[in-house]
Length: 325
Image (cartoon, rainbow, N blue to C red; front, side, top):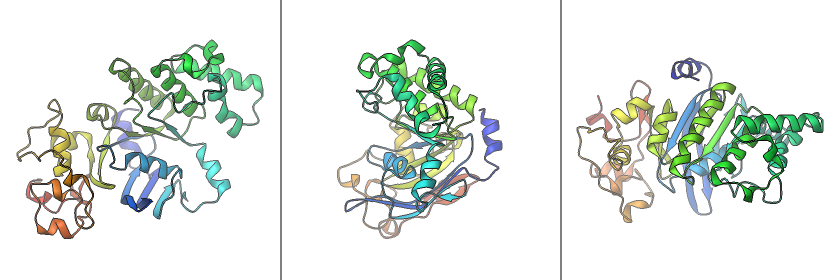
């Protein structure tokens, strides 16, 4: 799907609507107040450093971890309150590609059995020959041979295992594919191939992508919109060109400054690198205040709201208005 057609899709109702999501992992608040929309056919990039809550958010959407409060709307259904039968039906359209391709595959199952498993669960009416034919077709679509279906995961490279994971996720033609760091464990020479495969499949199937990564170059390549997460909160949301060309949150500025090829030479002093003291979320106020040279007393006592500062550009920073135009 082209960026223009993605823009058209965004004029409709959201496919996925997340509002005020909070997830606790033990005594720690892993996600707090997370709110965003994802539209049909769109690619939304989600970036942030390790431990920021990106993977927890992905698992909360699929109800693989429990949310304390909030709303996850999927085509009018609240996934946090729906019954087991509804959730089972919805999961046909919600699939995920994981970070570690080998660990996500059952070593006791052949590749063919792994890819066919969603069909056995959600398309039980298909005969065995029909399942076999569909497995062969999707394996070839992701760049593997149909006769590889009799092999086991340990016989494949990391890139091939990720192709298997993508085949398993896409065999049902889901409406949303969540990609949680899908290329971070792969060789650089393979990463581009997997990313382009995902984009080709999205174009063919019209699937929406939630693309989670710490690799800013890849996120910039695949995403029309990007949201930035820090310490379990969304701190900035903007179209890709706006976010990379004129980032408004000091944390986003720090992320871009850490990658010289992506730095936009903005008219502000770059934020210092992380410190151990600043790596912990603040109990009140802005979680980034301990690492931000622009912090004022207000930042330590009041959590900044995610407010719109430009068209389609949202920022959670008390001082963003001083340098955003």
